[in-house]
Length: 243
Image (cartoon, rainbow, N blue to C red; front, side, top):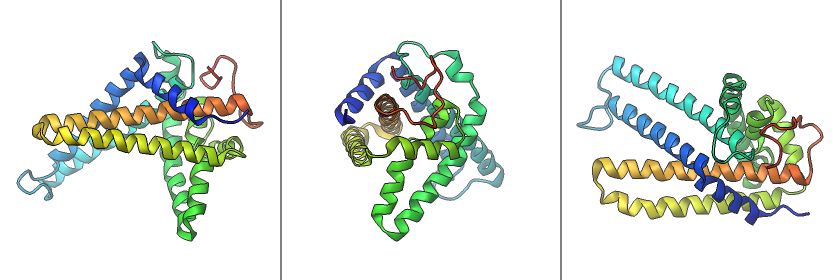
């Protein structure tokens, strides 16, 4: 049975528009607006570029870092939720199970992942894209199966084997959807003023983020159901089991 791009995208859309998806949209939007406000505080409003003072910039930077960490943790909870059958409630287990360790792994793993893709892209575009697609699902293994990021890289490499071209097509399709939605929202945002406009922009960005996470999780579950990787330690009843 072949991997279905349409099924992954439609499942991702369904999860985004259900109660849990809407909750995550609200959370990501609040975090994004808060981060934008904190960033703005650290600069002189007269120029928009000159820092007001060292203390304020340092405080704003620390708050922004905390917001970033909370955003990563929220993404982990979202992946766990979207990879499960839960649509109306977010189980406490998803919010608490090894969340600190998972957040640290995603933080460090993201840096390593970006470097690997960048190194591949230095030689040619194709190797960079190959690495990007082959290792893309590492964060889902970290979030759902409690693996560290190195184990996640190995598991993702195995999971995507033989289906990388279709998964690349899925990535391109999701990217175009995100660009289209963001572009469509950008037009009214221009006319909504300095407050409502940025809020709308962040809200739309949150929608795109949640849709991307939901589609990623549903694609992951579809791949697992087609060919369970030998090195994935899925537990019965866990968030990693196909819904």
